[in-house]
Image: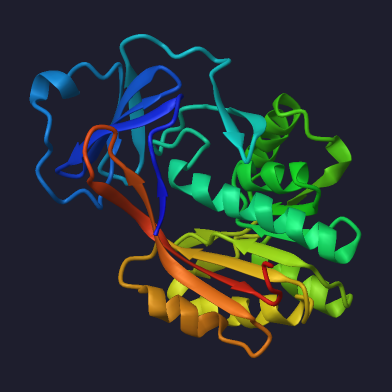
Length: 295
């Protein structure tokens, strides 16, 4: 398992009955967590101390209720493999804040692998981050020495990512922020015979592209992975794929990327450990293939 433990600016205090209680950069937050099907360990008074709470609406949206409005300059500082970063935080109507904290071990893995590939190749690895959201992983990979193509359909989150890039003092030219559909980006790359040294894909269960292209994980993931393999270098490359889709299991992801090129394939769960006990809040699954030896 890749597990995020308590950090200096993030703690998972409790979870249960479809909610989670966190401290995010000093703000105590109560928001939805469908995976938390158990009984909370803390009592109502502890949960009632939350200053920011997400209220879901019948139409599938939501809104925040803030007792004290969080600072518009709120950031999430973190060191990844000894390198400091600052990611911009914003509380969105869907209950997000711009950072998925279960991804911290993924950032650490990516930072190490990019550095390793850079040494093997003798140049900056060319990597792609598909469904990249606000770009935390892209910023980490760029800081490790990669040339990054960050792809997301939302211009708003691309601009958000650029804010975090500047805050983290990562050179502007190291990331190309591409507003587009992930599947179309891969098809275009194949047509132009572009190849990459690493690909990170963190697809949602469903969604829409820039031109209203429909994405359905279970229907489209096998075609996407075929495309990813077609634009990856055969040697000295990696593929990191995640799933947050109910019913999709780890071995299914392993089977998806199965290819003779891989020297190793690792698969497992993503999760966040509670601050004061050993419970882990599940947050998806992953598979990672590498066509090189780590040593």
